[in-house]
Image (tube, rainbow, N blue to C red):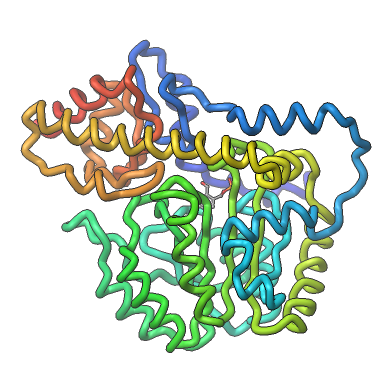
Length: 399
Ligand code: PLP
């Protein structure tokens, strides 16, 4: 008998399962709106020019592949930090910002969660309702109790702001509050700048610990605009944890490039925090890989490549916005009574479309259009080749 006999079969990842189902679908006209990656106007995953040029530069000077420092490449960490805070931010000049390279945004969340579990063992975690599936799983695996705070309001297709603030006000000091910096996944609904002010004030007055997940910087309103939330919290002088991902913004999903930044209250605290983060990393995967971070670092530290990247990022952002606009106007033109204008104020790759589970099932069964059962659609999977078909099919299920 096997010692592994007690191992139970884990449930399938619902979104990856959807893609498997999509791939097995033999219909010629089919659309996968379930995925979480950006597709260009031809539905293809882009390889950015800035990335290609950075890679060409790197290849021009072949280098041996030694170990990186445990916390990653200094030039990369500095650039990642500057992207979040701006290079002259007081937290940086005063030595209150600690940044380590991580394996994507997920790796940043995991290292952050493990670190916090060790040093704030009494704390609970709250995530938005709903949130990215992996938030709960990562923090629970790290040993935390994970609760939720009200976030999405299905009736208004917007934010349950009063519910959210009221809940945050009720939390014990030290509670870790996971916030989406911009482009909330899965809903696409973000607080307004004024609402963020109030959220920040509650977090500060209640002594909560904001853990800000920044997976889509540049996909909302712009690189700098999307950093406003992080900078608002950084300006309070409180402890803040930030996970960054470059998977989407550089279209480097498989390279696993991300960063974890902790804001402390002194340079001395920073040194202690960094020493412990390194231990956490050392006992997980020892040190991060070289290639992806070298690409990102080359782009961010070479002005003409950084400029090119910003242009390409703006193209992706504007294309998604354009698809939102076209979807809404096509649905209206098809005579759908339902008001879909809320899709225009949502940001990022996703939209809680308001489609019911039954409508999602009909789209799949009758039209080969795959969306998540919650009604989440990936707007960046829309393109000029499938938009009319998607709009017409959605119109059918609203009849
Ligand atoms: N956080 C959120 C909210 C996400 O949507 C994602 C990716 O889908 C991540 C983190 C993880 O990003 P990465 O692929 O860099 O691990």
